[in-house]
Structures are given as structure tokens and as C-alpha cells.
Image (cartoon, rainbow over all chains, first blue to last red):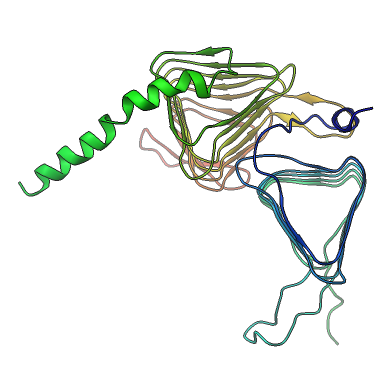
Length: 149
Length: 187
């Protein structure tokens, strides 16, 4: 089966013309055989820091225009659909007000078969259950910590 | 009076590229089944992945100055741009059933119009209709099965889910009517 036919069976998509994703990876990039980065008006940015792991399962489609910044680990399950212009990050880069103090990264996990709508933002520590549907233009945060005593 | 030469310059700036924009349209849009006369392509070449049907009426405009416009159809898909429809830069229109953009409808920059439904293995969609003279502002997402009524305006960043009545201003996620253009506020 051809590369494109393998994906076509799962999710309908067209990928023919448009810019390739802009990847700058010093870490580990684990992409299953039929991960698809959709072509579109704007390329997807994928940044993986040294020692970090970005994992995408088979049949996952990542649409155009997104920005993915991985400092520790972002794991995307099988058959996930990430919509256009979705931003995903597992670290806030630095503490507010202090550029020198790094923010501890919190891994992001997206379960198999989930759908993330267009223009959504997935914040550090977010966990999306398998099969969940995130509506467009939403913000996914980490689960609330227990109230401080 | 001092604005007079500026006006001439503005007018010329709009008029002079017209022959070029019109004459390059048939070549840039050669993958479309029908391209009406007077259709203009401004800026870069639009990205067209056509496995279904794309029909563009007369005098339509595809402006791709800063980011290209993307039109995509999957096998059963159909995109219809009526006469004088305008699609601004970075907008992406994807169809697996039908997307109809009415006469003089305006699709703003970086809009996402997609009639595909992602529910696992199935490959389905529900048609989207943007009726005549409606206007989608910047970064509007239109979900499958939506209808934007004639003369309606959707505010920037909104998510359209369902039906927007004609001649109204809608905003928010999901977009709700906040004003009617006949002068009454939404109750």
C-alpha cells in the first residue's frame, strides 16, 4: 500500500501542494510511518529541544499553520486529527518576569482518536483523553492541582 | 484639493494591475472545472488540490498576497464560488460534500472553512453555505453544516456552528447574533 493510500483509508485529506513543515529538532522525533503534515497556506513549525521526545502515532494528521514546541515530551496517539493553526507547547519557556529562570516542562499527552479543533491552544501539562473532541478556538490547560492547604 | 493627485494614484494602482490579474487567472486556476471571465488572482498563486469540482463564477477574486489561498476538494467534494465572491489571503476552503460561497460574499484572511467531519474511520461531511453578500472577518472557523445568511457579518475569530440568520452581526465561539442590521438589538 502506498504511503498516501495508507492514510487516506483513515481520514480524508489532501496533501499535494504547499510548504513543507518547518522542523528544527535536536531531540528525538518518533513519527509513525503514516503521520501526515497537511500542506496549507502556512507551514507548521515543529521545534524539539535537545533530549526531548516528540511522538506521533500512525494515522495522525497535523494540519497546517500550527506551532509545536517540545521541551520534554509531547505524545500524540494513533489516528489523532490536529486542526489548522493549533499551538501546542509543553513548557512556558521561562517564569513570568524572569527570563533566566527556566519553566519546568510538563509533558503533553493526546490520546488515540482525539480531534483538536482549529486555532486551539494546548498548554503545558494538558492531557486529552482518547477519542475526545476539542472544539475549535479552545484552550486546553493542565488538570487543576488540588487546592493549596 | 491636495488629495486629488493621491486619488488618481490610488485609482491607477487599482486599475493598472487588473489586466494582469485577470489574464493570469485561467492559468493559475487551471485545475478548476469552471472559471468565469473577469476572475482575478492577486499576489501569489493559490494552492489548488482539486479531486472533485471547483466552480468559480465571473469577477471573483482570490487574493493571496501574504499567504496563498487554499482550495481543496476530496473526491466527492464541490466548491462553488459565485460571481464577485472574494477570498482573502491565507483562507483555506476544504470540501468533501459541498461548500457554496454566494454572490459578493467575502471570506476574510486566514479563515478556515472545512466541511469534513472527523469521527474515526468514516469519511463524511455536511455542506456549508455562505449566502450572498455575507462577510467573514479574520480567522473565522466555519464548522460543517453551517449556513451564514445573506448579508450577515461574522466578527473576527468567531466559530460558526449552525445557522446565522440573514442581515445580522454574529460574534463569539460559537457565534451568536449580537445585532440585527435593521436597527434592533438582539434580545
